[in-house]
Amino acid sequence: MDAYYRNFAHLPMEERKRVNWDHPDAFDTELLVAQLRELCAGRAVDKPTYDFVTHTRSERTERIEPADVLVLDGILLFVDVEVRELCDVKVFVDADADVRLIRRLRRDVQKRGRALDEVIAQYLETVQPMHLQFVEPSKRYADVIVPRGGHNTIAIEMIVAKIQHRLRGRSA
Image 1 (tube, rainbow, N blue to C red):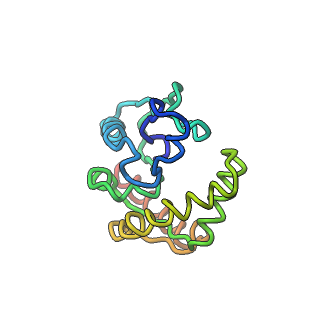
Image 2 (spheres, one colour; image 1 turned 90 degrees about the vertical axis):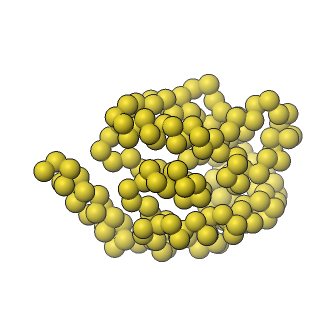
């Protein structure tokens, strides 16, 4: 879902830094839904790419071919009813708040070149409140909730088995 942030290139950098990137309105959900529909119809799409250093959508796109299984990831996916309706199986990977914070700190400082104080301020001002307002309530739409993040091998094996079962059913 990160590829579908709206392009705020028209704003000066200081204003782009103040955009609430953790609110559903920060995403071009219309484009995401349109491209998901294209993929479901068997047509390839050119997925946008996003530059997290400049807070702008890149000119570069990534060609995505249709497939029997499409995996979407994003913390706000289940907020939008149209996105939910396009998903056959909705999995919510639940991670503890401290784990989420540590992952964000590492990612934003190491990969996006942000200052530690800036990342902490963003977490307190927008990330945590938006999580409570949008992300946490949206997990009620999940078909499966996986506790302990990606370290739950039993849940992962069950999800893989379900996907394999559905694929076998399609080929029969």
